[in-house]
Length: 168
Figure 1 (cartoon, rainbow, N blue to C red):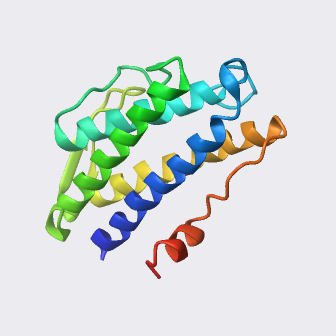
Figure 2 (cartoon, rainbow, N blue to C red):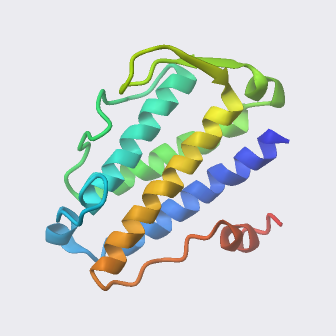
């Protein structure tokens, strides 16, 4: 049960990120880094945070890959290299989720958060649900940056993806 849901969320995550990055390309370099009052200040800060957090989580899940030691790390100043890294990370996430089975998703999972370095434990499946929910949360802030500039923002509804991808 978890596996099919997580595969859908992994595919949705890639779809939504691609749509968001396409819209963000209309900002230009000046607006990309402009403080707009969202949690990570700008579109740059928000998109970099999402990539940083995903890399941190994927290292926790897999034991490998690049991962910064800060949630506010600016991994890429410009949109284009950030977008390439985002595409690669989304493919990595999809492949990882596809490699899992129900037993692994129900298995214990332990990690140490950056913000409060005390070991946390739970099951892998719910931790993966958090990864996707976290993406959705900050994509909403990125969406607000776009609309705050008066730019068209893409529809990112999960149900739109499900219908478009024929997953209903």
